[in-house]
Amino acid sequence: QVQLVESGGGLVQPGGSLGLSCVASGSIFSTVAMAWYRQAPGKERELVAMRNSGGGTNYADSMKGRFTISRINGGNTVYLQMNSLEREETAVYYCTMRAYVTVGEWDDYWGKGTQVTVSS
Image (cartoon, rainbow, N blue to C red; front, side, top):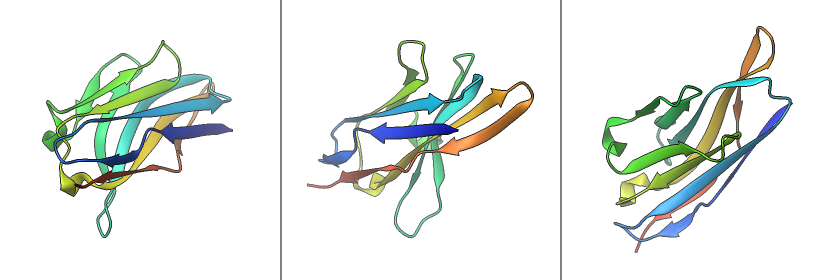
């Protein structure tokens, strides 16, 4: 089984910065991609940023230039740096991973999420 644990959420003022970490552990044969999603109250879950195993990244349009997703130390840890945060970005942020647990068998895994609150 694969487990994802997010950390780094909390309270930040509008215009401030925050970093989120996600550590994956368990029976991981190889990683296809890791990503961050978020879900605000009353809204659908949406993609924030994604990084594939080749280093390619993809961001939602509103996050481009403000958010950066990176892989830490070559392991199964991703970091999301968020700058210039806005009140509307208050949400639960979820880490997800698509990984092969054995040859030919892959699945999507989700963390439990970490709360980010943007407020003065």
